[in-house]
Image 1 (cartoon, rainbow, N blue to C red):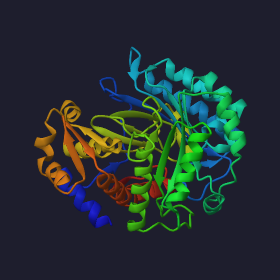
Image 2 (cartoon, helix red, strand yellow):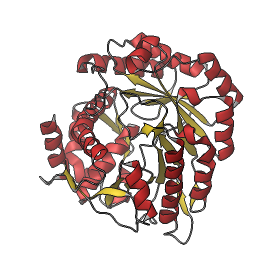
Image 3 (cartoon, rainbow, N blue to C red):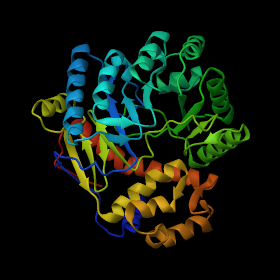
Length: 417
């Protein structure tokens, strides 16, 4: 696995040099000239810790949570005040953890962000099914949230038991969503669970759209080594059959494919934190992607707060990109949308896509991974599956290793990937 990802990295970056993350950072961030800039805010608190979840999270404690939000707001001031005028950004995304546990302070965070940024495409927030109540949804909408994503994972009691999740009150969920409307109501599901069949996922999708969703996300189960999950991963053959079957079903129903894993009922229903050329991240474990660097905040909540109290950014690690490293990163996450526009690539890097990766583009079309029309490379069903297959390797070889280290060490000296 590591051999495959290492070989791909060397080929695509045109060097044997690994990705090197160092314990260094810039106090001043050069985001002023970034186009299509997104914002991300991480709220790392949960009432219960799901064994399969790899993200930075801790058990909810009111005092610690309020201390954290105070530090988070200060971090936003520290970064936002670096510019003399408001910066136009695409979207603001709240992830976690369970952001709704701090519902009474969400508006305070948004108001702080609005002092420095102009958000053009909406404000998105993740929700646990238990938090989908009329009272919480009303507060979120009043705070400025326009899009929500509900982490259902599965409506099936069989898979809820496997994942350690409680039974979902579907009637209560439907009532709350019918009462309080949002531009996008997305529901997340996990596919490739043990013995999961096409009918299982089809039933989840049908139920989601029938009770108020206009967007769904079907994420693959990934077996991170540092989680406590005992769920077994599905075989490659079964996974491809399942993904292709459910994708064809969504196409047959007339749903629009927004990305590798997401489908929507209408064009306007979109929800994604993944496909941004650049973004600023606030909070523990959040990441920032700029034109020439990628940085990661410390995962440790107390260390995060301490750094902020000392008027220092809470960065744990930074990578300074070579040009080809940045190209690979851009292509990898842009392809998440299933499409790569060669004009966008040339605008960002000042070099034609075909000049940078002529052979790779030829191979992608030769083997049926992508088709080309009017300057856009679009993934086929085969290409989408193998994107997922490679992403699984990438996740386990790189993200799994990095997050596993940072989970135990707030400020590692260096990580080579």
